Length: 151
Image (cartoon, rainbow, N blue to C red; front, top):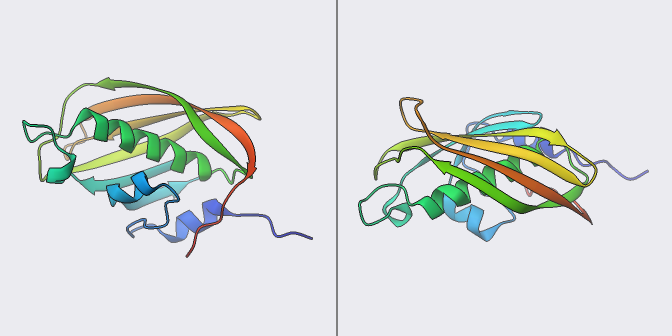
């Protein structure tokens, strides 16, 4: 019998550590720390670095979108998906920003995990837990086998 993947368990083991196992090269650029993992929900923290800012030295909107996309996906994989789902849309509301040097918290949640489409959301908070970004995303099942993390 083939061993069933348990990505959620693998992610749970990484709480408190920087996540370097992302299969996304873009996701690896973010250098985030996994704070908490529950099935269908993850929380991460990361510093706003200079290479993540706009000319005003605030978190760039494109970087915020990349964070949301990455964390929506990570939350989805915390449900032990057996196949790869990919983003088909991302709707984002920019409510405030975060300055260079600040630490932000991103919380990703799975709203619904369907056989073909999954609905997810991500909220980014500043250091005081004020909401600075909120995003919703739909993910499409590619039918390709999910990957394991290299722990």
